[in-house]
Image (cartoon, rainbow, N blue to C red; front, side):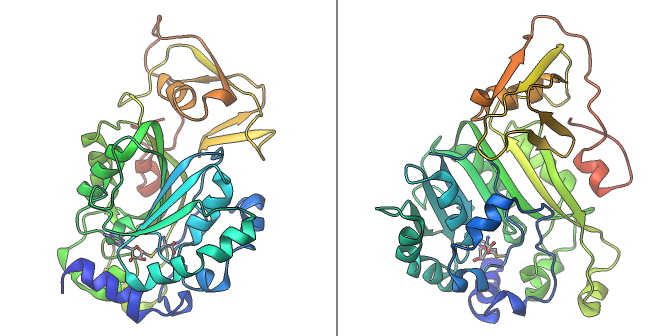
Length: 347
Ligand SMILES: C[S@@+](CC[C@H](N)C(=O)[O-])C[C@H]1O[C@@H](n2cnc3c(N)ncnc32)[C@H](O)[C@@H]1O
C-alpha cells in the first residue's frame, strides 16, 4: 500500500482514540506551560480523544501571528494556537485524513464560542504537507509553522522542509516535535503500517534532517527539548532492532545564519516583556535569558533574537564590525542529544 494511504488508514480507521496507540513514541519531551494547561481545558473532549501527538509544542509570543499546523489531526494544537494568537491572529491546519478533519471542523463553532471570539480565527484544509501550494498556502505568508509528530510519517520529507521555508515569512519560525533516529532505517520499516503509523518506521535520521535544512539555507537550528524513546511493546521492539529513537522539539528560523557560531562580542538582554514570561525566556535547551541579565551570544543567536518576532523583547549590544573567532557554544547539539559524541555544529 502506498505510504500516505497506509497512514490515512491508520489515523482514519485503525485508531479510534489515542488509547489505541501501541507505543508512546510520539511524545513531545517538553513540559507543558501553566498557560497551555489552562487553555487545554477549553478544548472539546472529542478533539482531545483523537489527539495523537503529545505535549504541546507551541512557542511563546504569538499574539496576532499567522500559524500553520502541519498534520493538524483532530485540531487540538490548532485550537491551542487559536487562543495564543488571539482574535486578530489566524491558524490554518492541514491534514490529509478525512476522518480527522471532520472532527476538527465539526467543533469550530464550539471553540469560537468557548474563546469568546465573534468570528473563527481557524481554518482546516485538506491537503498534503509535501505540497502546501496545492493547499493554497502562499509564499512568505506564515509567521510560525508547528507540527506535532507528523513529519516522520511523510514519504517525502525533503519536499516538506522545502515547502516550509517557501511559506515562512522572512524571520518566521518552524517549531516542531517529532521522532528522530540515530541511523537511516530500512525502507521495509515504512512499509509496515504499524511501525510507520506508530511514528517509528519513518523516523528522521538526525544527519539527514540537518542536510535537509541546509538545502533550504537553514544552517543553524536549535534543540529545545529531547528525550529518548523506550519502546516497551516487545513485538515492535523486536522488529526495530538496535536503532535508537528520540523525541525532539526543534526550532529553526528563516534568518540568514551561519553553519558555526561566530563570536562578534554581542550581548543580548531579555526585557521580560513576553506575555507570561516576566523572568525567563528559553531560546533552546542551553540558552536561558533572565530578564535584564546580559548574556554573551554568537551572531546566529543575536539574529534569532533580533530578526524575528522576538525583536521587541530583546536589546542586542554590538554589531558585526569586529570578529573574535568561533563562539564557544555550549555542549548541546542534535548530535550530542542523539549520540554519545559531543560534536557541536550549532550553538
Ligand atoms: C500522529 S498524528 C498527529 C496529529 C496531530 N498533530 C496531533 O497531534 O494530534 C499524524 C497526523 O498527520 C496526518 N498526516 C500524516 N502524513 C501527512 C501528510 N503527508 N500530509 C498531510 N497530513 C498528514 C495524519 O492524517 C494524522 O492526522
